Image 1: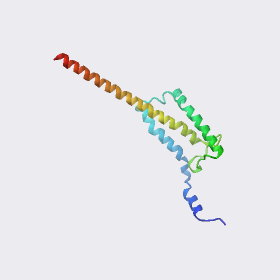
Image 2: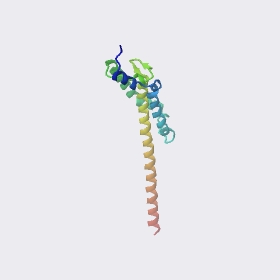
Image 3: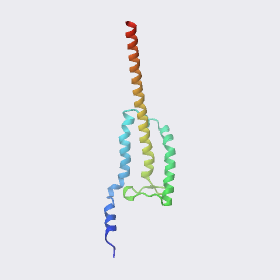
Image 4: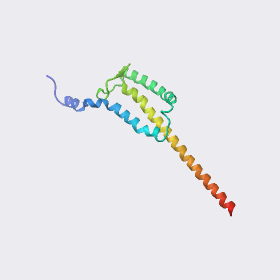
Length: 144
């Protein structure tokens, strides 16, 4: 006879519906979608320099993927199968985790480059304003 009680009830209550297995990938796609305007509108130029992008994220992707594979192998780390697709790379690494190691650094680079672009524009505008005031002061002083 199967025991019925709190354990069975909790397991049933915490089991995610089948469509939840796309949740991790959906969140990563949302991260890319939210940061896309940084490239298209602000001109972060991250996607337009693919070799530089690969050189920037490759070390983190490799180190953290290896780290996760070791942790999974040793039983220190696991992924709730309710929230991943079930597609795994060698070492039982979920495809979502590799996507995480690619997507999050890309979003960080997009943010960093966009802030750099915006700050450069602000500095140029401030320099023009100072130059305009200095020229107006010289004109006013020289014309008096």
